[in-house]
Amino acid sequence: MAEFNHENGAREAEPLPIWFFVGVILLVFGVLVLAGDFVGERRPTVLAETRPGLWWGAIMLVAGVIFTALGLVGRHKG
Amino acid sequence: MVRIELAWLDWSIVVLYFAAIIGIGLYLKKFTKTGEDFFLAGRKNSSWVAGLAFLSANLGALEILGWTGGTMKYGMFVSHFYWVGAIPAMIFLGLYMMPFYYSSKIHSVPGYLKLRFDEKTRLLNAVSFAVMTLLMSGINLYLMALVFNVLLGWNWHASMWASAAAIACYITLGGLMSAIFTEIVQFFLIWFGLFLVSIMGIIEFGGVANVMEGLPATMTSLWATAGSPDENAMGVTWLGLAMGLGFVLSFGYWTTDFLVVQRAFSSKDLRSARLTPITASFFKMALPFIVVVAGLVALKLVGNPDSGFALPVDPVTGEKNYDAALPLLILRYYPTGLVGLGITALLAGFMAGQAGNVSAFNTVWTYDIYRAVINPKASDTHLVWMGRMTTIVGILLSVVTAYVAMQFNTIMDYIQAIFSWVNAPLFATFLLGMFWKRTTANGAFWGLLAGMIVSFSIFMGFRLDAIGPGLAKFLTLTEHPSDMTRNLWQASWAWITTFVLTIGISLFTTPRPDAELIGLVKGLTAEPDDSRVAWFRRPVFWAILSGIVLIALNVWFW
Image 1 (spheres, each protein chain N blue to C red):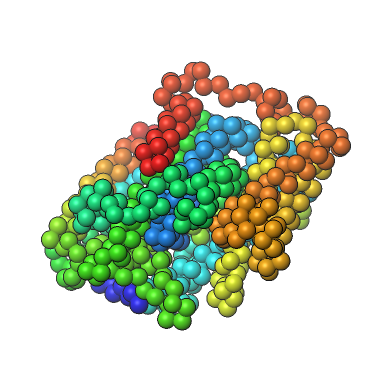
Image 2: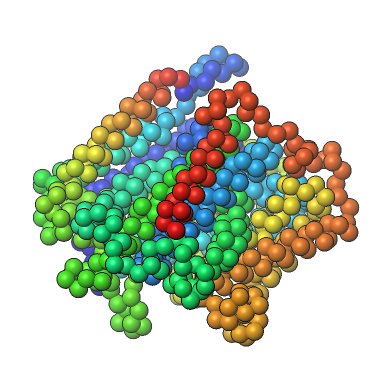
């Protein structure tokens, strides 16, 4: 991501790719949603037996890991 | 009344979201030094980043709540707003208009009007856009506080001031870059936070076919019941949909509204800028899978008294609150943790829409009003400072507008029509300006002004009951038009007025020499050359693919 600055011969700092931030947020929220399935207060919901917090939280967590990795790879490519 | 109680885990997600967006703003501040950085995010974005931001700037929580409830009233006709009412315009913007916008290196949409026509046309558009944006921003803030007050019991003033302060903080720090980053975060939060509602609804009914089964044809078709206003709940015809929504309102909004177009300006090159709306079009087409599916699930549940699902009814007016449909579904299906995610998705939707308005406002004010009229010699550093100050002032004015809206609820009726006053006639001005070199500055200015006046007059005529059945039939093809029909036709009349008057006046006034229009008008500008780019990277390839998907969806749900 860094660009070479021909005037001062230094590499200009570039912000981390947005995918990194998306990844971290999905990862953290995925963990919290997942945690809700185990330790959250039990509220009567329809289809509770399908445990949506468990599998949706897991999907978010995996997506979070992928996007975080994408962001870090994008950062190092530059 | 519905009241969602948040557990500590849900609150953790809401609080972490606030911390994340303010943290992103703080992080991006050190990368925001020049005017190009602050107002155009450095023009470094890929088409993916710009495309998702382009879509997210338009994807507000109000729209999602409103159209989920709207599906309960109008059925699949709501999909028209996502498909024919958006996709053709987005493709047209990417293929045909973006080369003029992007290549002229302008900072804003009114900036093009200055280059192509003159200062007075730019100022007319800049002032009307600034007023419209502030109104939208204030109303958005007011409705956000209303939704969270009703659903969560949050304090009005605290909701408004907390979200306004967070937005002011991260936009002042990072400018458009901050807005784009948070818009993309919002995009993912909306999908992860709300798509699960549709999935759970489909699981409960055992499949999409079962959700649709038993619903009347008016609820499950797109065009089959558009032959007459009496055949569909929206009270519109295919002509009104195609002309008013699919052409005038849609093209007016998607091709000229700086709030969305600004995201394409942040692209790193012309190809990425052209791909921006085309990339966004695929995600736009997918949104009915959240909004319409959730609305149909809610409709099906309401029809079954044993489901335990009922919309709240206003004790005074007796009207059902359709906007509560989505929050009720969240409450029905989401356990602790997921509720926090769903509420955060709505919160993010409100705040990103707000941030989009503010970042567009600060650019138009700084470049098209302040530098154009007040301080033409302002340095780049001064303009960045002005942009930051304008952000804070814009947010404060939005809060004031929100308090006004709280006192005068009728202001909401005006907001529904505001796009037809500003964007619909503006599209005619841009169409002629970009594609007919004979268009003159006086033709553009007076045509635009007349179109805005006609649209506003028709709106007020209906509102004050000054338009009788005969004139109503002439204007809208029906004696008793629905609000939706009025809106579509007043936009169409505004467009026709501007189009015809601009041509007429241009023919009697002197056009600018061709040499002054190079890069601004088709025929005098080099066409984008994609011959050296692989076919699967060309905007036209993705545009054709988007068009095919659009046609397939319309045929499938005909």
